[in-house]
Image (cartoon, rainbow, N blue to C red; front, side, top):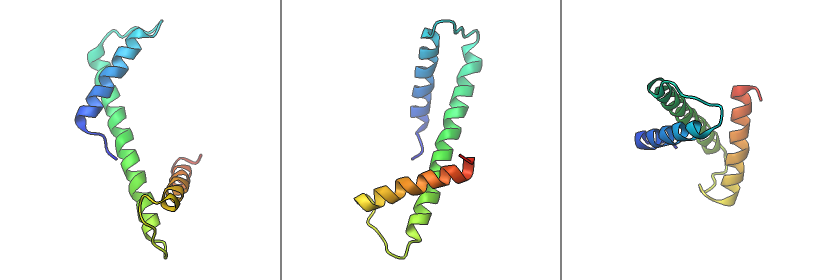
Length: 91
């Protein structure tokens, strides 16, 4: 599921705050770091959405349909998701 813009900005602020609390980490220009954090969070959200769409398409192609949310569907979703990640990122 794609994160909302508000959620991404909230998480970016939390990450900035936590980075400021890490010993040895100094952020000289938060206005340069924050957009990069937002970009990474947005890219991750898009990636997750794309993987989810591929997994759902694969599950929908099975000859025996399963009700979404059932235990069997959840297990197959998790296994298929792992396969998609391995295939995409050569893990």
